[in-house]
Length: 409
Image (cartoon, rainbow, N blue to C red; front, side, top):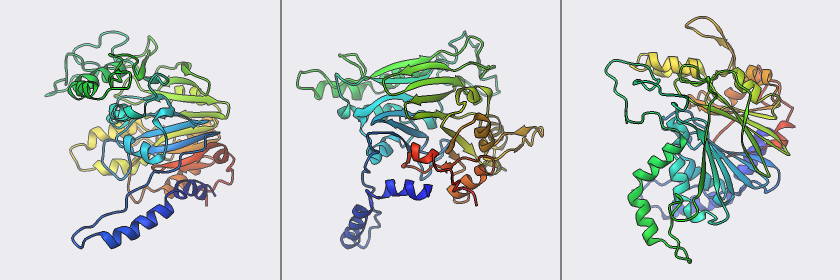
């Protein structure tokens, strides 16, 4: 079945090595030391066809055994990274993927659980960059004030006892984010370019200051009627990237208070994959993902998520954020106004998706496990459903043919 297919691809390359390593650890570890077996590097997906590698599957900036949100779409061996949450550097290495195959990095929005490992990812992989042959498209949100000055509250709204951080520029976009990273890491980078030289005496520099840069940074322009107070006006998808393997389109998502936030669709000769990013169900995503082969959608068990903060100082604000800016595992009603809410399975059905992959999972605990998520979402979706775990590898062609609906009982 589906679970066996995914587990087999992930485990086949680590079983023998892990068993040997465990035996070695037991015999060599001193009595005072408890040491866990380390992961080994996996075999990457085949260099033909289309695969998903779920690098990080956790929502939010909360530590857990999962890495934060990041996914690799692999098309005939070419790699496209969607979001760069904390843990991406390690998970990418463990997956067996090669940085030299990365053609694009697509950031949905600038929440920390989607960008924390963006600069580290490109910086630590510098030795694996195919200098002179590889330029990586880095696509992400433009500044929040790109359509005009936002006022002294920067579009967030005035709150008592609250000052803006970095008030001289409180709403940078993807270009400014990387420029600020380069500035903050200038000492390390300047040290590197003076000590690590290529054979032609060109310095170790990914910024483009000394020769070819690693990144072609593209900030996505929001429609003229969009703003922090009108985050996702209805729009037709816009094309943001194209090469010989993929065409990428995007549309604004609904994820308050974050603006702009984007969803992406990748069209290939093997079919289409749509990434929701963080968002409540909305018309723009329906248009973007219409009849997509795979919808990769964020998901929350809303009741369990709200319960995490019940009785804490964060209860009111986190409840608002959970209910207004995310997608529930099952349809229901908003407890604040009794309006109907659309669950992820019902939303995928409305979109016409052939398969549904659940990602950005919250809460992350033993009760909200894969079986529960798949079974619950499957009540409102007839196609195959998969709840992601870190380092899952999904063969998309086989997944969408898996009409046995193994998530249902």
